[in-house]
Length: 204
Image (cartoon, rainbow, N blue to C red):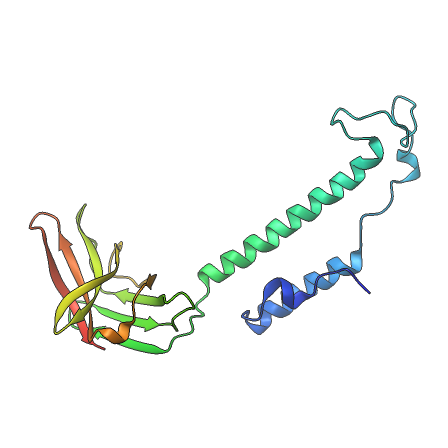
């Protein structure tokens, strides 16, 4: 029985088919390559004449026979870090978002789409906001996404800034059930006037 980890246990099941196939080929090549080769005969004799298997220690403090194992372990750790970092980066930039409801907020000033994901076991609701058409605000001003009831902002989903009218996508987890509210609103917080100015809204 092989001790190699199963590919599906390493990457999960939410990759696009093409990306999954590419990573699976890399995984199979690593398994086929096997462990690093034994120390070549020409390297068994140390430069000072001592055999590589003697008990003398390297400056690292490790017996010489363990240096190869340590290097192999370091290579394995580096590979795991690379694959883990790649997958984490892929998941952060992925457009995959399991939504159970989508709400559009549109007027002459801005267009936005809010997608609600299923509530998790802790009672949190993930939200994905994609907005465009908003202008860049002065320092200390910002935009806020609210949930509303009877047309009035009740709870804050999150605050954000944009660099200009191009599309911006953000994620907000909220700790309450959207079913308890009847609308969404994006407002601009005016630092000088100390008030929130509505920009675009929609009913849930």
